[in-house]
Amino acid sequence: MTQESSKAPPLYPKTHLLAASGIAALLSLALLVFPSSDVEAKKTTLSLELESPTEQLTQDQDAADAVQATNEPVTSPFAQIDNSAEDTQETAESAPAAAPAPAVEEKKGPNHREVIVAKGDTLSTLFEKVGLPAASVHDVLASDKQAKQFSQLKHGQKLEFELNPEGQLTNLHSKVSDLESITLTKNDKGYVFNRITAKPTVRSAYVHGVINSSLSQSAARAGLSHSLTMDMASVFGYDVDFAQDIRQGDEFDVIYEQKVVNGKAVGNGPILSARFTNRGKTYTAVRYTNKQGNSSYYTADGNSMRKAFIRTPVDFARISSKFSMGRKHPILNKIRAHKGVDYAAPRGTPIKAAGDGKVLLAGRRGGYGNTVIIQHGNTYRTLYGHMQGFAKGVQTGGTVKQGQVIGYIGTTGLSTGPHLHYEFQVNGVHVDPLGQKLPMADPIAKAERARFLAQSQPLMARMDQEKATMLASSKR
Image 1 (cartoon, rainbow, N blue to C red):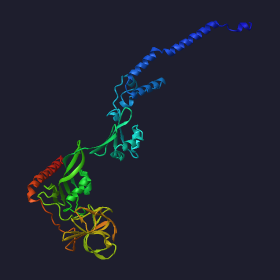
Image 2 (image 1 turned 180 degrees about the vertical axis):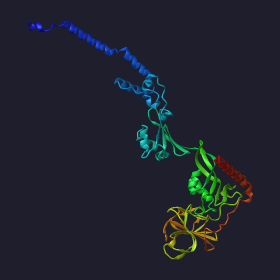
Image 3 (image 1 turned 60 degrees about the horizontal axis):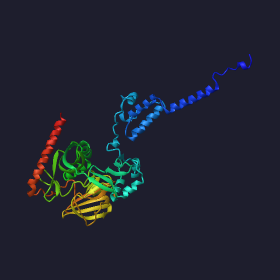
Image 4 (image 1 turned 30 degrees about the vertical axis):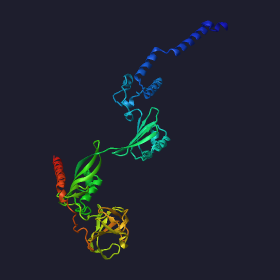
């Protein structure tokens, strides 16, 4: 066999091969320009399933198409909104999608934004969170003198932003309390500040409590606020010594004013009536405002709850030393009369004037340290020693009112710890303030007695009824 005969002869002429290559190129081009009907139908179906007028859903559709092009599993763009365990991946893709529930932030419109103040937040950082430039904060705050109140942020406070379609701030709103909210609204000249104050509805509320630990804990458990507990102690403070007289099993009933906005309690008013049972003896108080507009508390039969002096000048203090003519002085270490009562309490605890009077001394006095001495008329005089400091406005030669804060618990002078040394004199003679019978204040005037009874009797009846109903329901 010759070398020439061993070569395979060409199957097609050269001209035929060139023609075939040209046809193949034309077919490839046609496929690129005119895609198959199956591929087009599939894209149309997917487009119809995700069709939505909003830009956000259009972006989700594009993302789904991109995932499908890589042959990866397709996750429904509504998965985070539907949050349904029953929907499989196939049903989520094949079934026509229902309109998604709007996000919480957009309930008031697509241009509404809400942010909650967190630790470290400033107005600038909050503006950035809603997509506003931090530099715009200066323009907002400079637009109105009162607008700076928006920069006084509290942890947990909510700010609501309204933006226009261009993303510019048109309204800023925040609730600063249950009764007040502030708003900035944009106009042609800038922003206008507005404060909205809700007017609460006033109703009366009732609480009952039994003391099984401390008064403050038992009152809180019954639903009485700290301020109302202090008010109750003040009302009965002429008859009950809350430093040493409170016992387990003591009871109280209180009817007080409650301020309500949209069904929510937002604050309290004064105590209207109260009853306190201490060591088996019951004291009753009713608030009454006379025709001159002066309010005070009286017993149910019209006698004043207010005596000429309060029994305890320090609320809820502990008696650390009583009146004694033969006590050993803790510092001098010798027998020395203790002509007063010591009330131990934390440093800085307020001290109240026992009655109206003239300040004979507000200054330093030997072993008493910082001292206040008050003259009450011609007969009575009280002394308050070892104060940390004096209350604002209390000075020698001035006057004070009963219950007014005159100073604060301290350890000045000869003192081993923070306490108040309290003395009581009658006609220049030291007496035991715990055993002294206190003079009464004036009762209800005869001209107002009928009006007083018309107010007090329904309150007394309601306390009786409320307590009876509560006890009956507790036995069921």
